[in-house]
Length: 98
Image (cartoon, rainbow, N blue to C red; front, side, top):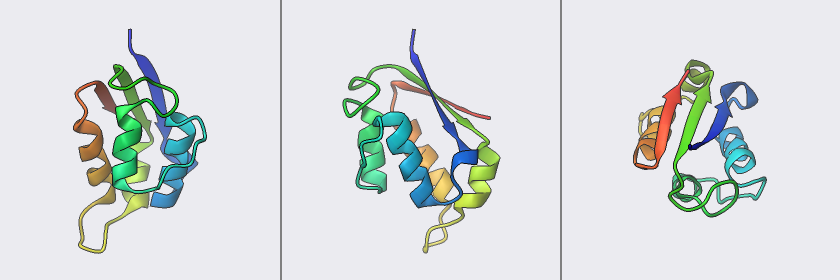
């Protein structure tokens, strides 16, 4: 059975807030470098709440709110979609948006 981790979009409204939330739910409050590479490392595991490559179910609650709140990077790319791409790059993660 996989561990379930919940990202709640009501707990943040910008990218920095998202990274703090990831530190809380994935790294047991350890402060990561707050960038996409560090987020990718947290998802891989071994830094807090799950072991490396341990199967997890990651549920992003209020994902539509996050999609709107997180906006776009300077190059116009969606921040939310970039984060989801990083998540989907991990075969050990079952990702659910709701």
